[in-house]
Length: 467
Ligand code: 6PG
Image 1 (cartoon, rainbow, N blue to C red):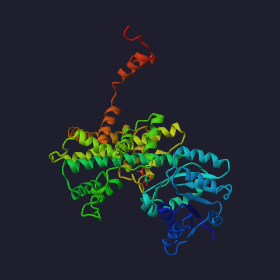
Image 2: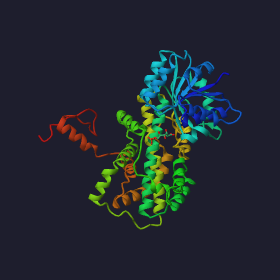
Image 3: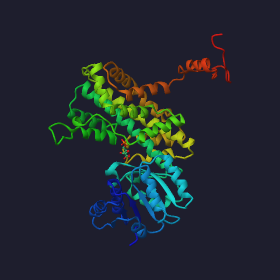
Image 4: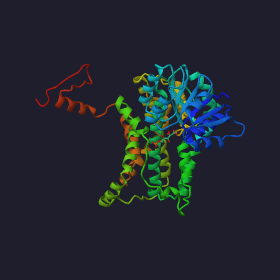
């Protein structure tokens, strides 16, 4: 038999992606050294579909139609290079290799060039939606090789999530653009997640809401303008019982965040090209602070933080809603600005309207706000920051007073609501026609003759300060 598509790495993501493809009538073959994983693949296939698991790459290669379409879902880093080296003696010019993991975009760039010389097509492709998404419809972010994409397009469109019947996949730009878009997707994911934790803390410790009550708050929000996957799962989380105790599971989970690096990479690259994405930076930082559990425990004994409860004001939950709404919007605004600028800086030609369209379904940051952004880019695809759109300004300004109230309440009561605080300062700075940076320029010129520009005439100036 000739198989249409091969997968290397049959962890849950790889297996589910392949099963999804088989359900869409493609004949699929998966390779894994672990025979338990190859048999798990075959035994979980839908009856009537063509799914085969093999234990050597050679077997898979021999059974694939030409040009071969081979995807890998293996951990980022060296494993990807190892797979490429194992494949090279087996594949032939014209074959297509897809890396569907969370690889760093610079690695993808290097691999694209390396394989181009050997006439092998290499597609760096972001896949979002977790295990469930892979099985039933992920959001797919391929980039790079414009020749190879049309060959795999029908398959990707078949397996991708659909919004109003339209598949959540598109060619998102040159070279490593697919992985770049996925990296920024994850940065936005980090920021929104951090903000939900801050809201949770104020609902819980501040207003004293129970898990059931918090479930209701998040479920209500998810039924309105905060409709999104992350708000939806947050509502669910509060209901989950712990099977070891009588408590809710969320209360039994250690307050120490893990991270695989994509959020940090987003911040690093934004710093590299000078694009401000403070909400994403802060989300990474807060994960790092959370990881210092032992130090935090020591410090809390030393500094005895203030009692966090505050009496419920009727409308405080509404204020928190608005703070969350603005925070979510700003998380996207910063990530999208980074994508826009990085697209120029790294010559990726990322189609922004397609990015927000592809994110509408299947991925972790899917939300109804992405509909709004699709119209923003419809009006002006070159907009540098969606905050410069009138409709976005209208959405935001009406809620700003509530964000201020929440942030001031958080500050006065000792909450580490750094994400929300950062959102507010970002807005205040970004919307200032004059920042106090004139003083900073004076200081730089004072001690280092770094020169400054003037408000009243063009040119560079230097002053012998204090003389
Ligand atoms: C997705 C997720 C996925 C993964 C993250 C988790 O889009 O499906 O983003 O890629 O869950 O990499 O990242 P951390 O482990 O860094 O939180």
